[in-house]
Amino acid sequence: MKTDGAERPNMAVSIGRLVLKNPVITASGTFGYGEEFAPYLDLDRLGGMVIKGISEKPRMGNPSPRIVETPSGLLNAIGLENVGVDAFITEKAPFLETLDTTVIANIFGESVDEYARVAGKLTGVKCVDALEVNISCPNVKRGGMDIGADPEQAAEVTRAVRQATNLPVIVKLTPNVTDITAVARRVEAAGADALSLINTLRGMSVDIYTARPRLANVTGGLSGPAIRPLAVLMVWETVQAVSIPVIGMGGIMNACDALEFLIAGARAIEVGTANFVNPAAVLDIIDGIERHLGDACVDDINDIIGTLDCRRK
Amino acid sequence: MEQTQKRETGIVRSNRETARGHYVIEVELPGLFGVVCPGQFVMFRPGTGETPLLSRPFSVCSQTETGETTRIELLYRVVGAGTARMALLRQGDTVNVLGPLGRGFDMDEGRRVILVAGGVGVAPLIFYAGLRRAREEDSGRVRIVAYVGAADEESIVGVERLEPHCDEVKIATDDGSRGFRGTVTELFRNDVKYYEKKAVVVRACGPRAMLSALADVLDGQGIACQVSMEERMACGIGACLGCAVKVRLGDGSVGYRRVCKEGPVFDMEDIDWHEN
Figure 1 (cartoon, rainbow over the protein chains, first blue to last red):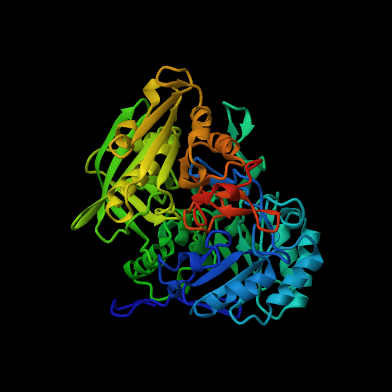
Figure 2 (spheres, chains in turn green, orange):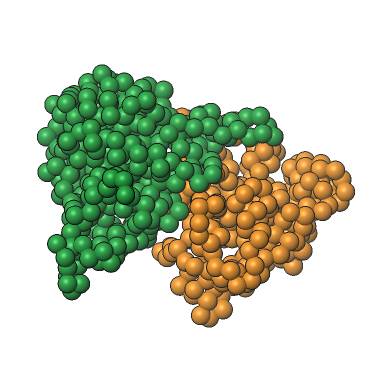
């Protein structure tokens, strides 16, 4: 267990049969198709990368303004703008194939069938190592959060995607529910290999001088440090409720934040809003986690995961 | 053109109020920082911490190479928490600067140039005018006329910076406290008939309402115009898709483009001025 300080700690983690070189993944919708960040960091250092949500047809997205900053947070209503699965495969995948990191495609559909069709099309695409199923977007009229908030529909989409692909299936859950573990258990039973949480919290901001909402979409999804304590709680609750791996996210800005999730039981973490603040934020987080392990004389990241001790002193 | 983009730590050299609520901040950056084209912008963040959380985009107003380092100036108006925090920066403070970003103005078009600026929108046009003038040896004499708009006399910015580069600077204020009484686009509308259409290009930056009114003035005039657009953005590098602006596509349909990547400078006729 103890290291002599000479060797670097093991940072590799596994999410089911998916092995990541470290537990730090960039979150969907905050890292484009990867290529946007290539000038700023060595993408091969990432544990993984989740691509912007992909739907069957291209989506135009919502009118502007689409984003507004709120206290320690970012409220967004992008509306899942994306190039569509066919253009992703022909235009975006070739760059991703050149990378030595785990690429996870985030998929979205307005119906159960659309999820399955997108999953089917991405299966066999060389660069795609796993699918993250977005049943939790708060900013679209059909699909998204409506599905993720209903355990029955969440399970149905999970089953359909499971049948359409042999890739590892990660289902991304919404925090906009009374009991996230109820959805988590149903999704697990429906065949998910892993869960990722949390997506954004629904939110709203008002311009008091114009008496108008600050987002054209009126409501949006809140991310950033403002939501972190709630995210840690939901990850901790979910880890205890299911036996499949959980990927934690929500307002992770630095290595300390990431370690909170790992100690609470997340097997890996996703970094979102922080990528907007500093395009190389994930490298600082990877290095910071490694340094923490060294300082604590722990030679394997897996010895940190789920070590939360809730006993009374 | 290959251009390096970096996120650098800069040092504030000065930060002073030049008109009511309007500031110019000068930041010193490592010499590796790329050469900025007028119309390009940087993502600027004062210090660390979570308030403000995100960087803010600013068009670059000037760039001066000083051997080991490069200095850029940004012109800004205090409008919210981010810019209020920015106004508190003092000489010697460190800041984060990401850039240069986006598409700038085409620099070699037109022998006669009209600049139309609203408020802090004057910033990239000061840069543009200075560089056009500096390149005259290669390009030949350029005639530059600037139209500058503000709410009132106390809020006028950039005129003294434009004057050395411009043959004429015309001013409009909403309340008539200086120059023409009315909007800058109304002032320009009165003059547009006197310009020789083919020889003239327009470069404009300002609030969307101003640019939209300018699009009206130029409608059917056959004058080439590039506008620098503004939208809220989180990343500045094309990932967040927050800064969408609606454009007309070749096939008659509409779509969104990113102000940070395909812009901030667009050809005026490409923008769908009817809605965001």
